[in-house]
Amino acid sequence: MMFEDCEKKLYLVVDRNKDIALLMNAIAHISSGILLKEKDLNFHDYQNQESGLCAYLNNYPVIILQSKNSSQLATLALKCQAAEICYNFFTTTMLGSSSAEQINLTRQTPLENLDFVALAVYGDTEQLKPLMKKFSVFKA
Image (tube, rainbow, N blue to C red):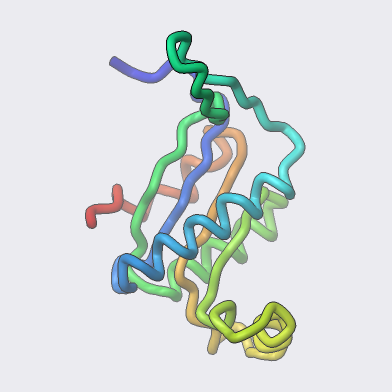
């Protein structure tokens, strides 16, 4: 059965060569960060009647893909930037002992030296589809 609500998608693309704990950390950061950048979100309450427990989830699919390396993620980030597609990324410069240190290191590191761990991309499915062709579904 195909999921019906696919006008938009959130893709999380990770470098398959990185440690799984690092990938999970990066995914958490880029997922929460991209939600602050994007205005066109559609979330729903998923409430269990018996317990009252409630989850709040995006209406649109979230798909985790893998890249072959950091370079593919850098290229994807630049393509998203050029096309004005909503994106967020995580690099190893974001692993310092303080936010100030991480921000400074990220700002001052040349692009070719940034080690990309993960990239989030959110937008219209048809616009994103050509950008996602070279990536495959993540397998842990």
